[in-house]
Length: 304
Image (cartoon, rainbow, N blue to C red; front, side):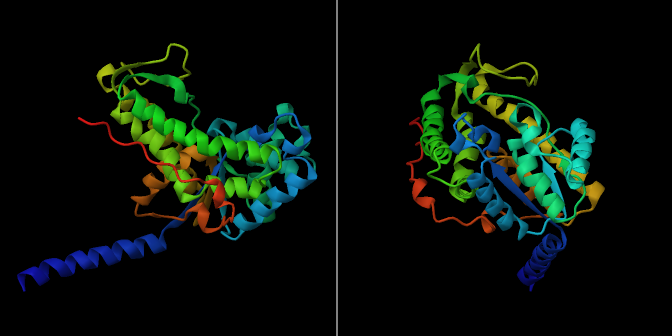
């Protein structure tokens, strides 16, 4: 009886937690290899050309099945006024994405965010980014740096060929983004940025590496952990912006459009929040192009 009296409340708590998840807001973080970045000045690489427009339309068609009642994009809250103005023009048929400066009209914020919001008769997409730039090459020395570099190389030899295939019309935009959201690729990119670097100690950062984050004094004995904190700090602020935007809209099905490296960490944060239920984008983005995700042997932990 004593054991039973302990187990029953525990089971009850688990059921309540599951019910809370069901009643909470569904959130889907869609990871993008930025559409504007596919363009390499060659016509076949341009998402504005008719063939790739049809591929982007297929991507939107699959994402529409999630039926979001709020869409959030990778732009800072300070940009909300401009985004609102552009979206109003687009809804009125007065905005041609190809006329936006510096090719920004190729971006997923417009090609997917704006178009889907209009299709669903939603308000302007919410801006939830927090801008900070940290290059993956910033971490370049220390004990176990080879372990970090091996993981980084494995990700590059998997992802870079996909990019070239998409540029040369050998892989559709739909399949490219579906692969970017495949659980294996999400786990790989998450591991490379938020896990492997912790192995690197007693090192330093590159003098030429990009970093706009200032998180105080760098303890070089834990250089890899500090490297992770640079990326994590930005993502915590993005997470906070998403929470704030969801509370403002009271949306129950939220689609967040972010760069692919953000997916794993955002899913991790929302997974432990009882008010939210994570819906992986791979639920809706099915692809038969998984042959391009060649299995890579994971980096092994260095011997002690």
